[in-house]
Length: 288
Ligand SMILES: [Zn+2]
Ligand SMILES: [Zn+2]
Image (cartoon, helix red, strand yellow):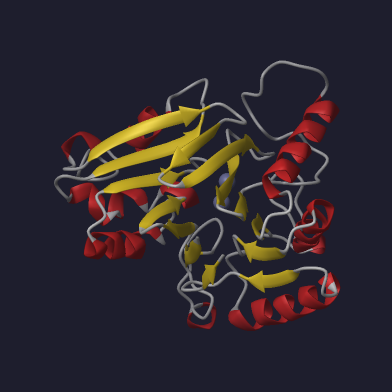
């Protein structure tokens, strides 16, 4: 597999000159195996990836969606393959009990919010909602999705190909005290459910080559009901699951390049060589 970062910024896109080294686009990754690219999340980074996919002539496209907060879907209406003939786009997510994924996307992409409705695009767009813990194949990649602790219905992914595994754990509050996930099946207490959600994140990341992790906060910035983790939480997860590498991701919008450079150095030192730590950056490619 080869993983490429097209958008690494959390919450909303930024364009300040001092932030463009790491990039200002919201979350989007491409994971390539056997000549097919699987997309993770549809933040504004998907715009440039869409053009690359059209140039390459790929017409079967799968998008693994973590959840439907704006920063993870607002690039979708600008995804070039939507407006191409003979193209099929399948958007995957975890199951929504209240409103279907298709309905959520239709509501985002309609007048007066956007001039072209999903019914009028040229591509054939399908929506598939998966059960928590289900494993399915996208091309030659085995994909497993699990719920995470974040407001709404949010899921992370584990992608496996040959002996390689990548985990995408975003957006998530990994170790916070509040249960934030909605639409969980009725069961035990909030504390037990929180414990279950932490275990699901551990399942996704278990001995992964790389864990792409929501590291929005520093510990002194942490807000308990926002649904995000700190960089220290990311290191804790990587240690607990014996991961080989941690990619800091979903950077706080205000962080500039100098700060991200120094955070990368500081947390590489904290990892003490147990595993790699990198701050994800637009254009970064990692081969597995
Ligand atoms: Zn987000
Ligand atoms: Zn979110």
